[in-house]
Length: 73
Image (cartoon, rainbow, N blue to C red; front, side, top):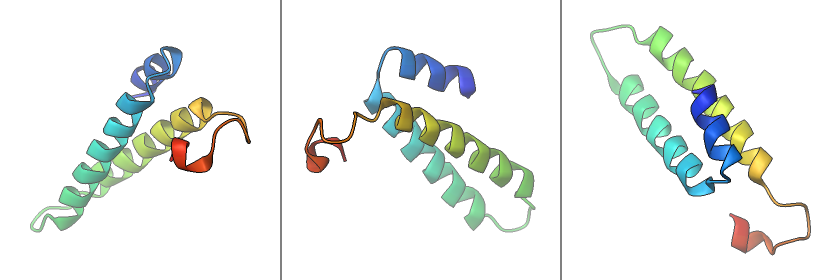
């Protein structure tokens, strides 16, 4: 995941990172809804991946005041 995020950051592909974040959040929600198995390890891995993705998005954030907030969010 770190290499994927690093690649997206390098090419400044914010959309790919936000799509990846949305996908991982969906997977997390699905894992948490599963019954009959113990998905703790998978949930922990997804949380770790979310941290990596969010750090990548933070790297792409423009400097404060360079864009109106509504154009970035």
